[in-house]
Length: 402
Ligand code: TTP
Ligand code: MG
Image (cartoon, rainbow, N blue to C red; front, side, top):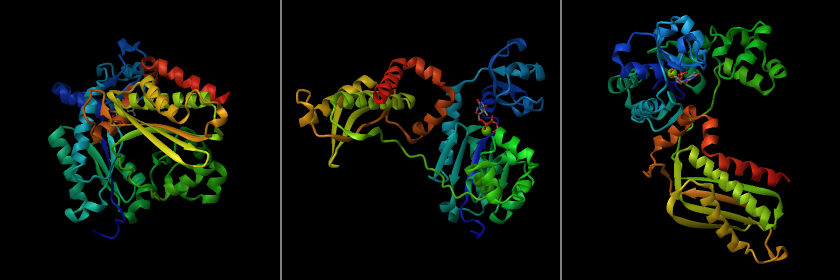
């Protein structure tokens, strides 16, 4: 492949994803303004727009807009409540297609992913035909349209996928990066939020080209570390690798004490705190595990691990703690006095043999899907459902502080 491709990174982003899935399920909604989000209640509704079909965007409706405003702009629109499970299902189908092209995939959210196809180039005729093929397979097999950006790095690829939405395919070669970025508004650069944009505007910086007039040192003096980031982003410099989502085989948390501990109460409280953390992480990922591991490192750095496999899968803090405590007491028997106990430097709890909540072996996608599920599950809901362990968690933090 040509030398302008040091690496080939593809950013895939589905078009109007939630709305497009709704249109797929209701063919009569195709070509119409579909708005997914809160109930507009005739203009009096509270809440926001999740997304809007491109037909609705023509009226000015967009994500995160108050639903009441959307209703004013587009009263004849088709308003739909979100169907999270359905979107997850489609997301899974799309990701499965992407895996045909490379195993080097980083799923960013429910509807976007980076692919590093640098290693697959000898299989293909051209970058363009590869991009077209990915889009074709998604459209033919799933029925949805995606926009792709292809570039030598992640940040340029992401900007490129957004460049010709919907149904776009934008390829930016290494020596085209600067010409591609220069005319764009700085808001297109990764990390330029509202605040940074306002500060940049005050300096008269609107486009990427404007930003490039300022040296590294000036931007750093104005914005600190973020200034150096801006300098690099404006030049399309980004060496970050695609972070391949790996299957999670275990979940663990550990704590190193500032001073070595002999106090069993402190140690057990720490175990409880760690159990709560592990439990929360399992529940958040809709996972359960069967094998609990205790890790303990003493003041002389000797380290032991103990494992115990339960009869049933669990994601409960209490179950994890109970087993961990019993294993811990092998090292620190409750009846012995503190002076004869070895000082502990580090203590950790892990859980493995993971399955999803329904008890089936977890697949790679289920792990990636965890990120997406957090979109739909609000923290409130999580805390409401698992309030007890959230409180335990808080208590044990407090105990540690005292
Ligand atoms: P996006 O990819 O940002 O938006 P989109 O796919 O709807 O439209 P496009 O990419 O063509 O511009 O987000 C993906 C999905 O995430 C979106 O369909 C709905 C959801 N979402 C929200 O629920 N709230 C939000 O504020 C945003 C931005 C997205
Ligand atoms: Mg999208």
